[in-house]
Length: 290
Ligand code: KIV
Image (tube, rainbow, N blue to C red; front, side, top):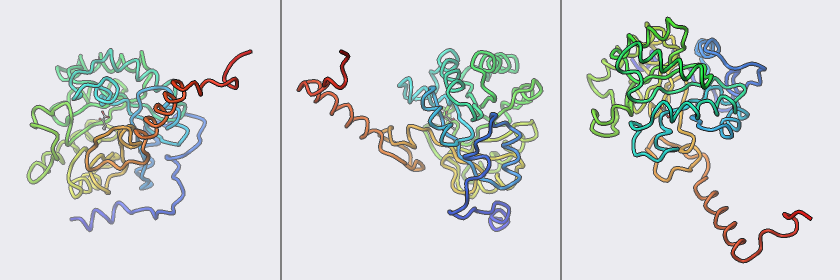
């Protein structure tokens, strides 16, 4: 099974030029058609979360083609210990700021817990708020077959939908903690969910904290891209929460690689600023008006 999978998802050499999707400088926003074309070309691409205009601008100018206003904002913006408490009213202004900050990236908004599970009407109404008030171009929901009516209705209404399977954090209480999902027979359930999302018209699916081999099989079985987070090397795309990626979060999961140490950089800057204020070294005439 795994040799079939690796044959259909060839690896780019490390020296490969940036793909058209990642790092492109187009004059228009990335669309779901661009995402589909990238899968057909076997391109790998990065996605990051963003929650404000300035970080969105930085990532957009770095060529990140898709930005996710995740409900992880609950933890990294609002300081909750799970994603459960965050509300639509909390997330819509963040999503609007990200859209204003990013000129090229496709911006996807997460529907938070309790804003789509009760049925199609609720899912459509919440999605409409994100699309009308924040101007996002796509919506993400957690779950597979259990949210299929919602996904079908959203797609029928012209809303691009990103699915999310595996360790779906809104179900943390049902899982009994943040644990790897899809091991053993559960893997076949996850595969069925992924195929159902694709059949319902989702344009992509996040696979979070699932075994590498399962993520490869799902990726090979779908014509829509898979976006991995803690799902190994075999997915079409990879996503990280930006504060994890940049080392601002003190404690992170095993799957997080830190590409900077912003926790130290910001702390050092704050300490140096404070030291100069208390000693009178700042501000000097250079930073003053005559
Ligand atoms: O909320 C979020 O940031 C997410 C990503 C981690 C996929 O769902």
